[in-house]
Image (cartoon, rainbow, N blue to C red):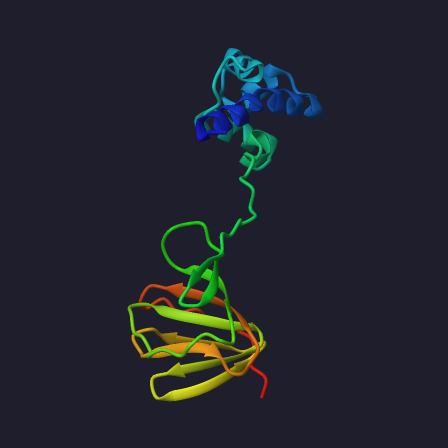
Length: 193
């Protein structure tokens, strides 16, 4: 369904919703006219669907009924929120994108096989946050050689030379968020000692 059809579908339901709400409140069109300042004929055309709803008309009605505007309009249907990732192979890893929108930050689930060869640490613009789901991750970051276990997280400026892979002969699964330079993720959980 395209966006215009979705909007038209939502707007088509406003009239019956207004009529039902007025009936539930036991009000006449004349009483609603006094409360809103909107003519009786306009209110009648709104309820019958002969007049397209606008904010100028709906806001006074929402105030008169003391309800949020969303109650008059109803919420449009949302797209399926599930992400249908298409895994791809990248540098010997399986990468599943977890975000649909362009821009930053981007989320990925990465599965690293134990036979992934070690390469030279790389640098590039950006900031990365990663969380180990399972296995043990070896992270070479500038002059540091770190091992992260399941439940541990790291964040770093990707302008520092870095490489990551398995710390032993078992695969590693991680979640990673990658953002533009200067965008930092914040972990509020206290790491285990």
